[in-house]
Length: 179
Length: 123
Image (cartoon, rainbow over all chains, first blue to last red; front, side, top):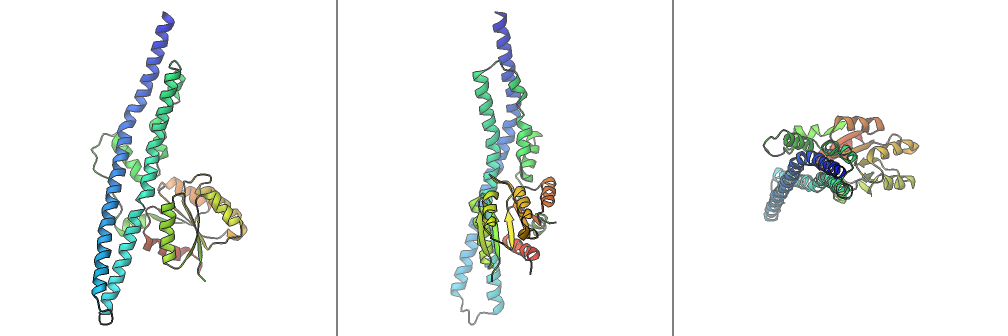
């Protein structure tokens, strides 16, 4: 009887340990997914906007008599088109960025699954809980400042206000370091 | 003759975006899906004018790739640009120590990217 009670207490402890790690992780992962949703939507909107701009420029050019159009007009249209294409290339990179963010959400979910499976098959193994370090591990997996910021905000319980997307030339320059 | 750039990234979308930007500016591009594949291509005698590589990749990451490239006498001084989502100063310092020439945080702006290429490429 005492042995059974001790086992049950160990099981309860192991599950409590798991819950104490998993519960704070859930708002962090939710926040990361929210930023992915926002970023995907932003990229789709940017693409739509730039495709519309390219289409308008193409219509204007089709209506142009290039031989009599002022050189400055033709040059400005070409520059505008190049800038639109650049913006499209930038927006299309969201796939790689959001893929990485989602991979960083998947990793702790898979760890939680493995841990729960271990608990179910061997519920009286208290050493299991010691191996669990979900929040620290997920934080270590981040590569982007936006991920670190979303993590901090979720941990501090701050209201979600969206993730800043670099847009100005100054911010773009900050993304380049030559050694 | 146009210069050749080796583009290394495990994301096909990224490889294609970089290739689109480079070929549009007159460069030739060789692609590799990770560091190991890149080393294989370089070991076959390929000598690109520049290497653009991601950091986190399966098989061999960007830092390991740079170290391998720097061991190759013919590529000891070839400019290498990291193009990655990683933005921490710690990782940038590791890139510099490994022998990277520069560090660009994704997403890249094509116009700015081409300007940087011109800066680091030998004339």
